[in-house]
Image (cartoon, rainbow, N blue to C red; front, side, top):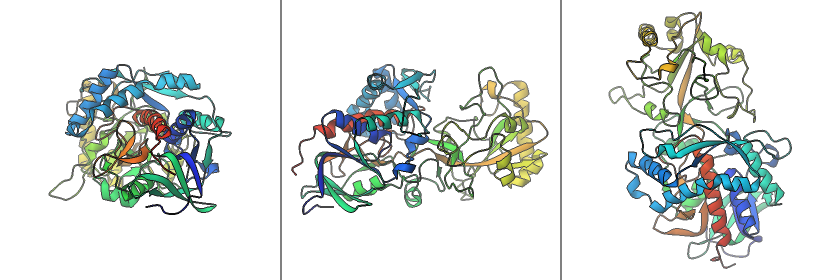
Amino acid sequence: MQHTGPFDRTVDVVVLGLGDAGAVAAVTAHDEGAEVLVIEKQPADDHRPNSRYAAGFFLVPEDVDGAVEYLSALYAVNGELATIDPDLIRTWAEETAATPAWLDRHGGKYLKLDIRGEHPTLSGHESIRVYKAQPTSGPDGYTGCPMHGFLRSLVTERGIEVRYATAATWLLTDARGAVVGVETDGADGVRRIGIRRGVVLAVGGYEADERLKTHYLPVTPVHFYGTEHNTGDGIVMATEIGAELWHMNVWPGHFVARFPGDGYTGGTAVDLWGSGRFGPAEGEPAPGSIFVDGSGRRFIREPGKQHAAHLALLAMDADQLTYPRIPTWWIFDQARFERATLVPTYSGPAGPVRDYAWSADNEAELRRGWIHSARSIPDLARSCGLDPVVLEQTVSRYNQHCAAGVDADFGRDPVTLTPLGGDRYFAVPLWPGGSHTVGGPRRDAKARVAAIRGGSIDNLYSAGELGSIHGLLYPTGGGSIAECLAFGRIAGRNAAADRTVIS
């Protein structure tokens, strides 16, 4: 929206959104000497950005050149590499590699884990290592991801002003199309806030907007877990002033469950082996568990790639005009049911933020009808609308693979080949989904928002999942938080240094 008339207030930098990316951008701009105002549409007493639902993993390149090679290989898989500025890839690698030193300077704590790049067939994957944030401090009464609590504490320590329960509704521009301010709507009504330096868009994606999901994602439905406030606000505001979009049709996916009727409408991650990770606990066999499609047959090497398994669900049967793998059925036995909760309680909506409380023994959810159960595989199949003969054959063949120690159909990791057995069998329908979208306004190596007509939009920066650098393939767990930290710093530095605004 082109701005005319006076502003109600003017500051150096306005940051839109107080997730990880917004918090880091605000702290960085403040430490560069800028007067910063943060606009957050969620209320202060119930502030639940996606960052709060996360477990706190973040990737760190141990070899920058190797990380450049790896991210380039990820882009090359679907032919996107030719469209990517090499400076953006190298900046990502260098800045994410600098995160531990930044955390050390600010009092952050973390552990190094023995997890590498998710796609070991691609060169450079070994250069990536996953770290995990450890609790330090956070707002009073805070529960949730330790990284977000830590970053919020940095904002509080600096006395950075945060205007909660206030929505950003328009980016204000001058006659040249440069951003000169933001229009907001909150308890004090509609306000126009001018900037002397820059605006940082860090308002998250569009996983809670059904219209945008249906329009851009390749299948419907797709269920995301996390905040219900990520409704594509940044996409709307940025496209209104001519921003270029990218990565709108992809996301880092999982198989997710969806359990409606308990006051929570989103999806939730599933803990496939009951060990807090996508694999059995060390020295402990995985309980019996397989995935089958609508015909009752296996179709994937379980559990699949953690952030790419959803790609196997997207194939349409062109003759039947159906998606035979939506839903996918998670079939498991009594041992898995009794091992642990079916969903993670260390993160996500059943985690510390407590969108809902999952029972420790899964019994309450079984009584609600969220979990199918039967005394035999044929009866379980009938409960799920699957062919009893086919599902029984599938389980029998899988058990034969377990006895042989080799999955002759899909090459599943032998350590997870535990036969299905026991007195009772269970099933849960799973859907394509995940924690967040990645589409939005494209950004460059300086975190500037790209203009659809070429170049960038003056004084506008972005960070976080809104217009993420990640495309079809996600590098590994913690890619999103790493990007929030890296491009939050880049956006904050450059917005604070911008002197092009005349106010």
